[in-house]
Length: 387
Image 1 (cartoon, rainbow, N blue to C red):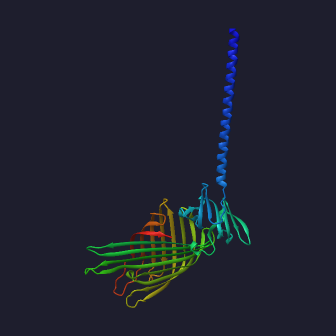
Image 2 (image 1 turned 120 degrees about the vertical axis):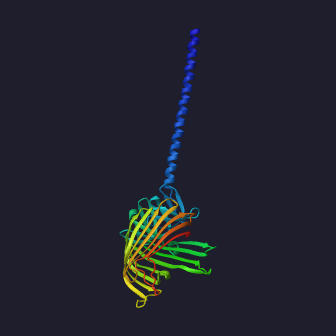
Image 3 (image 1 turned 90 degrees about the vertical axis):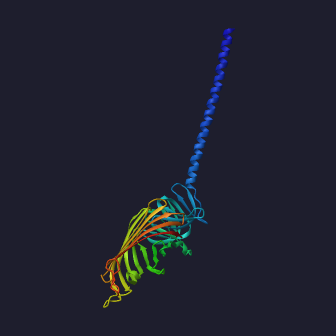
């Protein structure tokens, strides 16, 4: 009886352990199935997020290489930099290498290297550029895309502007008023670029009688129109400069010329370009010594260097170095150098610190026999606003 009881107990324990083991196996399989389904769902979600394609009906869409989508309005792509206006994020400057997909709901003017200018509905996907219009449906290699900008009637999309104002007021033993203004205006299309720059300085200091006397009053307006033949090479059919500085005996100086240019570095962070060509220069003097001409004209050679580097996400360094070489009577060798640090305050406001160096190699002597100093240095500080 004892043996039968023992055998019965062993059989019961075996059956019980088998049932427990079977239940554990079942739960393990269900757990694996759940994990597999979760992994499949996560993978499917990632693929869905990556391939999601918003239609460009009312807005422009941009997808970054991180698979994030941006909705808004494309201002244009130029120099490997995409300008994108978002209602929530305001105006963004995005490195072109960080852009994966572009879908525009408007006709764009597109500049393709080796093809030239074309226009149509634009779509950029990975390494291809798709342009569709009434007479063509073409796909180009993305590496050949130089620039694009929205076409149509919204001319303001092609323009940008930056204005800086620096003001210094001093009162006490010496009264002084000094201001500096800088204005930069650009118009960018698919193949052309219009640049306009103004720089003005006025300073007044009190004399021994307490009256404010003007000690500085100079103004410089420069402009150029560039036509891009390739991504790096451009023509400048016309450039000009208007300059006035009575304290260096220059009543009015005008320069008009044409030339070519080349962009050496353009990687979205750093840009370095050179341009130049022949020019005609006419200078009118405030006063001259007896027997000297009140104005002089000369042929000149002009060389311009432009350097722009993004030091950090909020700090930029900009340098412009313009050289002009004419005859000695008109000043000989002259240069205009501006070195600027721009520190971002907000999205549209920057703190602008500039060092300016103007040099005239051979200043013209005035009627009273005084000769202006060849070098003028200025350090300016102001707030700039970008539109």
